[in-house]
Image (cartoon, rainbow over all chains, first blue to last red; front, side, top):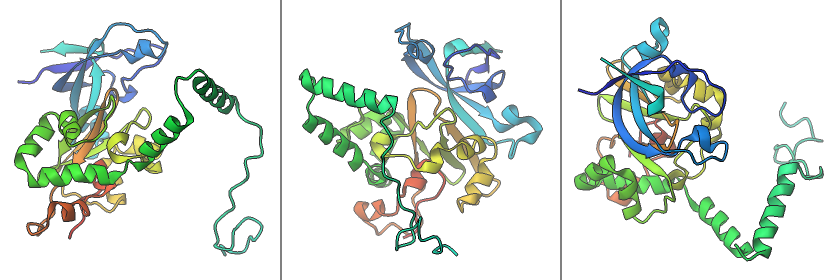
Length: 88
Length: 211
C-alpha cells in the first residue's frame, strides 16, 4: 500500500520547486528517488543538506476538483520530503 | 499577401534577420570575459569549447529512438530500462553527464506525457534541444490541466478508457516516454523501427509512426 501524503500548503518566498498548483493536495508516493541537493538553498549558492525526493501521484480530480478534464487521469511530480506530510 | 513587403522579406519570402549591431549586453560581455579568462588561465581551450558545442548539437531524437527500438526488441533490456533508465542508457554508450532519467511506458491502457511546468527541463542528453512549444507557457500551463485537449490539438485523440498520466519534471529527474510499438511491425529490424520513433512520441504528444 503506497503512502498517502499531503503537500504542505506553504507559500515561502524564494526558489521553490513545489508547484503552486499542487500545494495542499493529497497524493500517493509513486516511488522514492533518494536524497538530492535542495534547490531552495542551492539557488543561493549554499550547499545545505540533501533532502529525500519523492515522485508523488495525484488524480486530476484531486488537483482540479470539478474542473478536472477527466477525473481519473493522473499527474506525477517530484516533491521534496520537507514539503510532504504523511497522512493516514 | 505574404510577399508584398519587399523591404522585410528575402526573395524566398522569409523575413531578414536583423544584424547584431547593438552593443553587447551585460551577460554577453560576462560570457566572453569568462571564456577568455578560462582559456588564458589554461582551464580550457577554444578547441574544447567548440568540441563540446558540436557534441551538444549532435544530440538528437535519433539517440532516444535507438533506446526505444531496442526496448521494443529486447524484453530483458526493456525491463532493465524501466527499472534503471540511466544505467541502461549509459550501458548503450550514451553520455548522460549528471542527468537522471526515468522511462515511462505507454500501454493499451495508459498514455504518458512529459512537461516541466516550472521551466523547460528536458532530457537533452538523449533527445537534443527541446522544441519551442515545450518551453512556452501555453503548453506548460495547459497540459497539466487539460492534457486530452492539448493532445487532440497535436492530432492525438485518446479514448476515455485510456488513462492519461502527466509527468511534471519539477526537480532532478528527466523523462522520456516509451511509446507503444505500432501494429504490423513484427517484420521490421531494430534500425527500421528506429525510423518510426519521433521526438514527439518520446515526449508523449504523439504515437510512434505507423510503418
